[in-house]
Length: 229
Image (cartoon, rainbow, N blue to C red; front, side):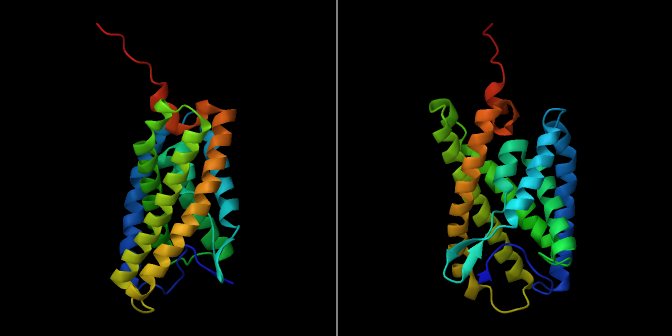
């Protein structure tokens, strides 16, 4: 079975493009490292480690999408909703580095592109979608609303990561035209995103029911309102 996933292998991008997106990834992670300090505290820091381990385990499991095609969870939206976007970007980067070094899942020369797609684009798109849909929690304070938000965030994150791959391949791909794979890649990742959305929704709702105080997306909803003067 062929596996369709976002991990790019060595040689798929030319050297100049690989170096370009390595720089992009480094700059993005520098920003994330600085902002993660405001997201983490003594209560949430252990959760970040658990999220990274959970995403690592999920990415090792492939599920069928189409005949001959399978995908896996990326985890960017899930991590961002639970521990914040900056921390999520760092968690995903650790997962990608370990997979590349120990499991040959994604090439070392393509690590910058993989980090850019999954740890940066996926996280930003997923969390941005969750924030845009967050008002639903005030209207419908239930697990169903949170599940819908998580599902939508994961779907958008997956498609955003796939789009990042297409842009990078269009800039410096070495194995053919990006146009020939664009429709198939995006269509397949919509299905992969739907599968990821279900996993993300179930996981986030379960955590929220057990420890809502640890869900980063809830933080603005818990801010005390100022009494009118």
